[in-house]
Length: 378
Image (cartoon, rainbow, N blue to C red; front, side, top):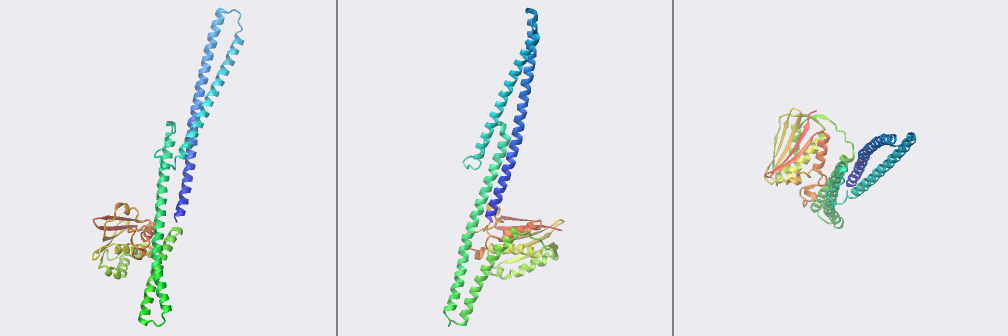
């Protein structure tokens, strides 16, 4: 997954460089060519004016002091001299143009080499290249931000693999231990045998849940999901969800209150939206203080429906709120997957909501955690 992101970033960077090169060639060559033509024009006008003035002056001097002069040939010599001077000026201007182009190319090549130099904060170019310098520095900032993001994602993936290696090993060891005990101890009592089988089954089910989470996030990432819209009663869906979570709520002494209209008809993909609400309520149960209340509110509006999940728990820092919907992110890095999941639930919830053209946000202040889902009315 991170490899795919890196490839996408590389392709995107290549597109940026191609666009930048096109912009550099177009803007720089246009500016230099205009300057070159202007200078050539000025030089041509000056030479024409000067040669005419000199011709007039020469004619006046010769007519006054030199009798029977050959004016035609002398004017021809003057014209040839003017053409030679003009050609020399054009050659000089062309040389200056080529020298300046080479200097700009060398400057841009040096600037390109600094794009990935972390010790260089800002790349400076000649005043004539100020627009290009701004584009290069913007590209440098974007590439550095993408590199940091890729590094963070890679680190998060590595952390998750480490957590999973530990969390998968523990239940697997338990399952293997109990099964080996049942195999090696044929005289074990029926009651103990049933207990060992029950423990092994619960551990195996937990492993299956973890694997299913990974299949689910992969499916949402790689597949073109088609939503199966149908009209449902959102209030009944939330009531059913609270009923299914009753055992988990009792374990921590939690109460779940639902504030919603008696009937709230809404068009959506019922199975996927139920997955969103399941993840949000599960998250609320896991991170709630014992003996507190979880509140679910559904509010219909003119163009959308808002569903709010609020629970009492440790305040989430602002920097963590910005990452909470990212894949593989777990709010408590020390929490094992046996209790905290694989860090994919909220990422899956966000993708489902966005498939419905909606939004999901998180807030946390004064030991209150609130998730707000906004879905458009179709």
